[in-house]
Length: 424
Image (cartoon, rainbow, N blue to C red; front, side, top):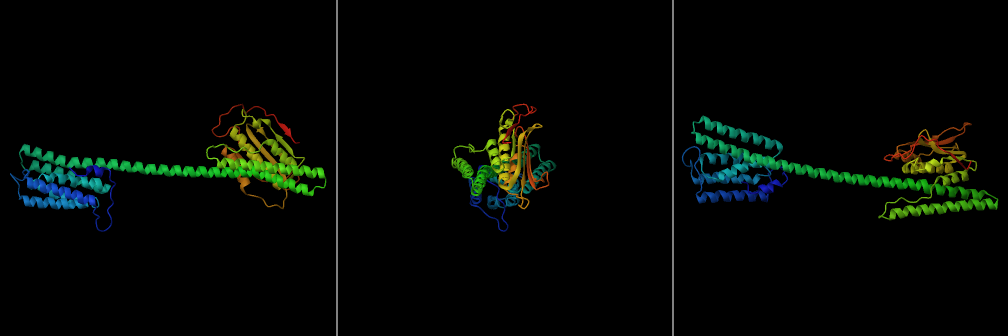
C-alpha cells in the first residue's frame, strides 16, 4: 500500500522539467519508507515461496538488493513517473515470481499506481494497457504451463488484484483531481466574469452621469449664455432686467442640479438618482426664450404612467432636453417641437433653422440621443434637413415604445392622445 496515497489524492500533477529530473523531499521520504519496509521484512524473516518452485530461487541478499533498487527508482515517482514503472515494476514482479519477499507486492502496487496518478494522460493510458496485458499474459502462461488448478487460481487472483487495484484506484483519484481542477478554473472564470461585469456597470454609470450632466447642466448653462448675451444687447431697462433674471434663474437651477448629482455620487449608501430640474414646461420655456414664436406641442399623456412607462418617460424627457439644448445653442428661428403619442409609439420631433456657415457637430449630444432611445428599445436620429424655403435646418426625431424593456403595459396604446398647445 502506498505510504502517501492520501497526499497524492490532493496533490496537483507535477510537470516534468526539461533536463535532469527534479527530486522532491516527499519523493525521497516515500522511497526511504519503502526501503525501511524492505529491510525490516527481510530481517524479520517473513516471506513466502516463489512461483518457480518450492522456496525462494535466490538468496535473501539478492532479494533485498533487487527491492532496494526498486525503492531507489521511487525518487522520481512525481517528476518521471515512468521510471518506477520501468524499474520497480519488473524488479518487483521478478521477486514475486522467483523470490519470497512480501514487500515486492507493495512495490509493484506503487509502480502501477504512480504513472496513472502523476503521469500525463497518454502515459497513464499506455501503462494501464501494458499492465493489463502483462496480467493477462501471466494468467495465460499459468494455464499453458501445466500448473495445478489451485496454483492457476492463485496466479489469476494475484495477477488480477495486483493489476486492477492500483490502476482503478489511480484512475479514480486522477478523475477527482481533474474535476477539482476544472471546478477551480471555472470559479476563476466566474470571478473574472464578475469583475468584468462590475467594470461594465461602472462604465455604464459613468456614461449615464455624463449624459445627465450634458442633458441638464448644459441646457441651463446654454440658457445663461443666451440671456446674458441678450441682456447686453438690450437698451430697454425692463427687458434687460427680465433677461438677467432669467439668466440668474437658469444659473441657480444649474447649480442646484449639479449639487444634487454630486450628492448622489458622494453618498455610497443610497442608489437614488439626482432630482434634476427638468420637465416639459421648462423645455418649452427655453425654446420661447430663444424664439418667442416657437411652436411647442406637448401631449399630457407623456407624463401619464398609465399610458407611458416610467423608463420611457425619462428617456423621452432626456431626448427632448438634448434636442432643445442643441436648438438653443446652435439653432435659430423658426423652431418647432412636437411630442406626443401617435401610431402606438412616443414620437418626438424638433425642427429648427440654423446658420449654414456653422460646422455640423458630432459630439456627445448626438450620441446621447441614440443611447437614450436604444436603452428603452427605440430609435433616435438627428441631422441637417433643408427648410421649406431651402434654407439650412436641423431635425431631431425619436420614436420610442410606450413601455421600455422589462416594463408591463398599463393602459391602452390605441387611445387617441389629447394634445395641449404650449407657447404657441
